[in-house]
Length: 110
Length: 111
Image (cartoon, rainbow over all chains, first blue to last red; front, side, top):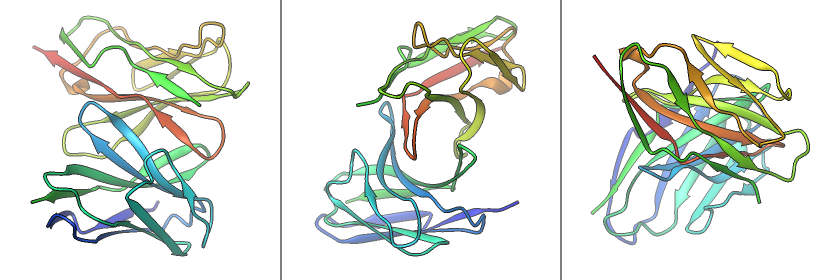
């Protein structure tokens, strides 16, 4: 088996701040994803990466950057945190059409 | 683009009654994959069911769903709800590397 870890678990930022979320997986999966989860809005795709050094924009990429320097890791940067923003960011990888999710990073912007 | 519609935001029912959560989709793919993911409180989503075969019933953990391409539907059903089924359920559509998720249906099962 494998596991996906996300750091930090909780992230508190200030308006306008640049914030970075990290994800690591030891499944050895090629493709990884970042989703944003908001109540009542489902899971919205921010970025995905088919393989190392590949980046593909999702439906919600504006305001975010991503980086995939190694197969096992996928980082997401909030380029300018929005005041009163609250959301959970989920990282995932995929194998045989099944997505495996990490525990999430909960973001609060003051 | 692709879209998934889950019409119920919240479904509340009594333990022992049947469950049906609706899911319809729109896609350009002629052979889409359909999924149901379940997310219990304070947990991450995990796969419950998947299907890519038209008109074939797929089952797991007491839940079942049948992909109907003619009506673009993939409804989730269970004959008898249990308290432990209370969770958030997402229907999702895949046809390539991307999955498109619906907005989710919260199922609350009362004793």
